[in-house]
Length: 166
Image (cartoon, rainbow, N blue to C red):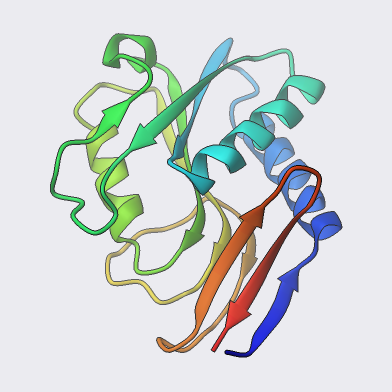
């Protein structure tokens, strides 16, 4: 299997910092926002974005883990915060890679059951092969790939990278 690095550790760090600034610009008038990461890599990315936001913004950030079955998104969705904790707040739903849009759209659907001030989405890699009409508000990189290619983001202790495999 052929693999090509599409984002190095340094590039990922730069993209996370840029996304954090974009989120801050969007929610600059808010006192508190929720960064909700889809388990598992989406949540790791959400943690990294939250850490950057806390460095640059006076906004209180609540971190939320969203658990859903990516193979069966119709199933129950669990969040580490109760709906009361994100009600009437700005929310950013985060995932590492946007493939077909299935995971993201069902994650969005879950949060729409509660009144929110503002709702945005963020991904590190947008593959541009959507099955659903999902728009990403904040993205690290857009990548046109074939359906036979796979994008994987790896978060390790002191390094991270993204690669494309054929």
